[in-house]
Image (cartoon, rainbow, N blue to C red; front, top):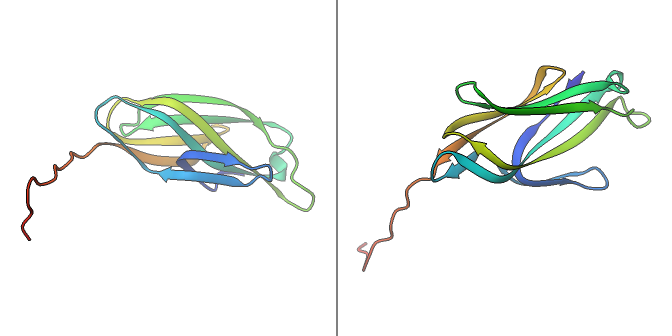
Length: 145
């Protein structure tokens, strides 16, 4: 079986030569002044875990962005294949960081990235696109206490 033990959105992530996953700026909310909202860059970071039985064959991976009304904003996908786990291990672990540039959100509200493997949802990341709160002007002159 293939699992996604965790998935999140971040400003930046990388995977070291040793396979360590480094993540900066994890978030669940985007603030914007107006709609539609275009976010310059974000990364969908997740880990895939597969049993030895899943290795050596192709699997279909799909990513879908769904809005709060259940409408698909976009989707894309590709094939993946797991290599054999190291000696003595029963599972293979693959850290992933998907860089997305200039993603457009049509309106404020709830959104969700769904990660599907072979047509089944294995991971989900929920977040909100929220209007920036109005700024309160600082008081003019002396402040009484």
